[in-house]
Image (cartoon, rainbow, N blue to C red; front, side):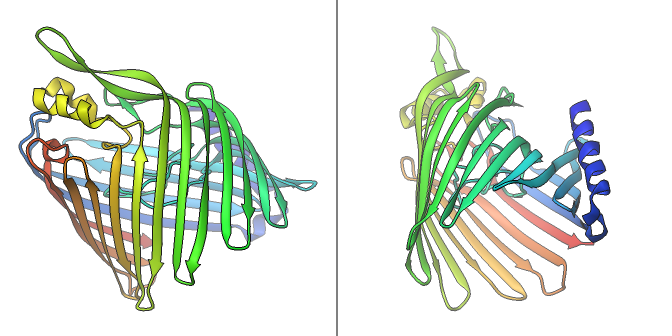
Length: 380
């Protein structure tokens, strides 16, 4: 916490001394969500119908290359938890032909919607019930721009979504870079990054416009080391153990089509080699022991995923529908949401998510049958 405070006050002091302070911008947003979950029978989780309340106040400040973003949040379920987070606190500057950044910043090179392999450093959970940009990571970065692209170099802290026994795994440090280039009809990038714990991560992506309203995109990432749950079986019992593995691939291919009526359709397939294999899930589901619930603590539950996302754009109403299918056991979830934003600076949303699958499917043992939610966002 001491490091957070020093970084926060240092950048705030720099902004106050900056001549551009007079043009400072301050934005404040209030977010709230009510979530109601209906439990389903599970051999792994003890679940009951639940109600969750979430509220957050976001404050961000920008002036003269300085940005500070903070969030104060409160979550109430079985107990009330409050949290204060400095999401970003960085300073942008230029030096000769380079543009630099230092501080805590969200750096995202990902391509895609449902899964973004190249969002390396503080990944966003795109398909979470309540999606918010996660806090950035500490970074020292520089960008050099050419006529048709740019070169990025950075050293930073990497955060991982993986949970070990319910706890987030520790962050680590690394350095790397990206080369981005724009061809006549293709945007491409190549990324290489070495992390102290995860080793090398090397990959790239490409985006091309097939027609005026249709884009095709894909990304690929190879990772030399990663953590994943491993199924262990003894004479009389079985358990899940977190272990390090070597060599994984993450791949995504998708298409995005926009229609004149204001409807946007996204279809994606992705593969995550870090997720448990289907035969491992079969062993876990056959055992059906609560001691194996750690198998659900992974970045993606499935290696193979198919997603369809449809959303509408209107001044007042914004409906959306998402379906994600695991083709290997035919389990899936569907999510529908309707938002209203006719009143300037305010958005109201209502939605529901349902998990479908047999008793021997991965989603079928998740412990939640359906979730309904209401959310509100007000810019103060």
